[in-house]
Image (cartoon, rainbow, N blue to C red):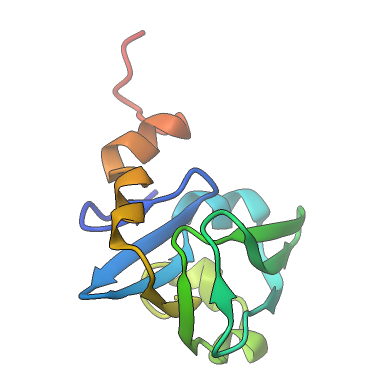
Length: 132
């Protein structure tokens, strides 16, 4: 599995790529693998106001539904409308083509509550070099 180090991660399995005051948000490689083939995506609307940790959309995968919880607060500036017609992009390319939304952050300090790649890997038990 892939967990790019330049990204921040939420405990709810979303990643954040910071671009100035904007946050590009998507799902992690781990959760797309857990859900299996994703066949529907419920996206937020442009202009929606998100609150950190509140639900802002949903996915339906082969192994069931999954809510999306906002890793940061802010206003939705863009959504990846291509996902509505091709939700499998979340499985095929979760970190680039499979982004979900771009949010203008209300409080960049919220980024401090997110995990580094190393901490996220540890939280999902994917560290293959674990010696415990």
